[in-house]
Image (tube, rainbow, N blue to C red):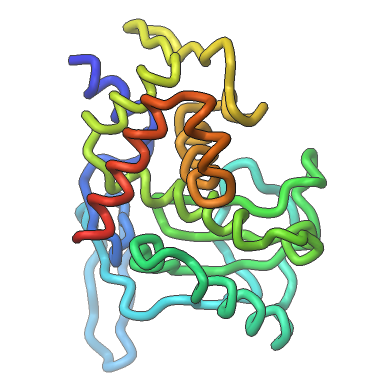
Length: 231
């Protein structure tokens, strides 16, 4: 079915659904280890599962994980940056605030794309923020956009299909999705996920422009948002 194809094209790393307050943990091999209480644990395969994010806004100064499309170095947060980010998060629409962020990481620049203010990893709910974010005059729109990437993993694939088709995305079996001939923001053509995040951002920052650009897509995005607001 076409909607299943779309689902896996925008969510290539997810094989099970997790709640907004959970992160996805892939199946992995665990070597033999001893717990702090002295209990010996044999080597085993840890099954794929969802783990609750019990808090939010976890500021990390470093990470041993490797992140796709990021080769830079992390740096420590300072108190003013933490306060600024927390204040901006409080301004987000309520339905987006429920998507708890497991890790906030700080870096100077996104190598290869120095103007990029942030990178988001929906599968583990991690945001990397660059200097460009803190230098921006519209930090709220950036956060709307980035957290919308996470929210897209929690939306009915049929609703997403309706949005992508109405926006002009073409899907053929065995091929990468072909972008629309016209997009509201240039990088919307990079991927369906980017197009969705730009649409949500535009819904809040410039709804008139979004509605004029594509009334049908506007109605779908509005329906998705209003449905999430009721949950």
